[in-house]
Structures are given as structure tokens and as C-alpha cells.
Image 1 (cartoon, helix red, strand yellow):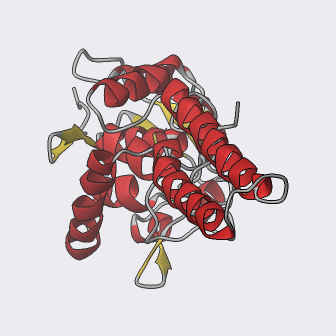
Image 2 (cartoon, rainbow, N blue to C red):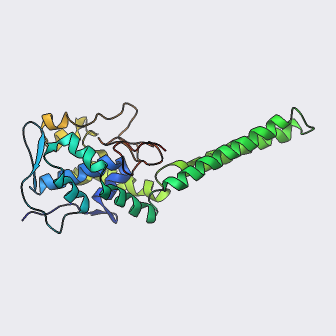
Image 3 (cartoon, rainbow, N blue to C red):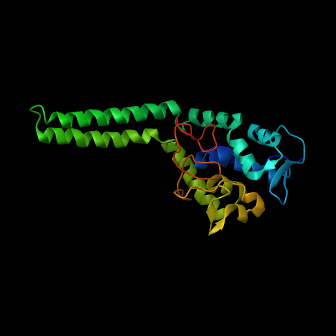
Length: 249
């Protein structure tokens, strides 16, 4: 019986790499393509994905969850996978291993940034009502903005380890054009050499039309937790977590 082909890249499972690179929907895309390649899922000409063989122990929990969600259109299946419990567990594991920041840590960094800016602004404003010199007030204000910019990095979903983890595999995927690393790094709606990834993989156009479009401000060169259809970017405290697009607080 055919089994999953999801492997490891730099110590990360490709589902995890997809989650880091493009969010929960990207991880679901990786699992779906893996099962299509393993011939345990089938895609009709109309874009509907159905299961064609029984489960195996070698499948990941995300793959098993996706299989149970069929039959669905490709886009609907990606959304179902993005909102599944296995995605939440994937994210928790990446937080524990230092690739992602928890929602709590990101909220704490955000509060700290606003506190720093408030203190700096208050010091500058105090110049108008106290004997505090303009030079001292200016230094405090500038220092506040510098510290706030540093603290803001703590609001981003990916840690420095997470950003490093997605950088090299993306370059390698584009060069080698291996199917699953390509999906994990770019997403089905990403592009490679001017061609959509789904087309490079030979997926049906009807199926691809059910995917959520990539946001206009996204970029193949960006890294981070984005939406279902393979976009990137910081979408909120729960990005890379449960929702399709990784909503906010």
C-alpha cells in the first residue's frame, strides 16, 4: 500500500517547513500533494479530491485528518487542513523547538514596545513643562524609538532560527524543483520561473481555481506565516496556528 512521501529538510518535516514558510494552509498543501503523489488521494477533472485507499500508520496526523475530510475541492480541503487540530500541534512543536514565537510572547513584545514609546514620548513632552533640556529629551526619544524597533522583532511569528530554517530550503527547492520542497517553500499559488507552482506540478487548472488567491502584497521571496493558499507575511498573533489566514487576537 502506498504511503506518505513527506520527508525531512534541515531537521524539519516538510509539513513543518510549509507552516514556517507560509502558514497553516501551506502545511496542508504539502500534505495533500504528498498524498496525491503517493496515490492515496485522487483529484478529478472538476477539482474534487477523494481518498482511494485506506489509512496507514506511516501517514502523519495531518494527512490522516485531511483524508477524513474528503471528498472536497482542493481549496476547501486546504482550508479544512489549515483549521485542523494537527496544525495546532505542529505549531506547538515549532514553538517548543524555538522556530516560532508563541502568541503570548508576541503580545508581551507588543505591550513592551508601546510602553517604551509611551515613556519616550512622555519624556519628550515633559520638556514643555519641566526644566528637562531639549537635548536630553531628544536623546530619550531617539533611544525609545531604537529600543522599540528592536523589541518589535519579538512580535514577528518566526524567530531568527525559524527565518534561517526557511531560507536555504527555499533556494534549494527552486534550484532542484523537487515537488514537496517546492510546495513547502513557495506554495501552490507561488511562482517559479514565471509559472504557477500548481501548473509546474501538473495539477488540474479547475482544482487550482478553488485555491484562495495570493494576497497582492505577498512575495515569493518573503518568509513567514501566511494564509492558506501559500502567501507569506505576519497575519496576527495566531498565525501559523489554527486558522486559514492566521487571524489576530
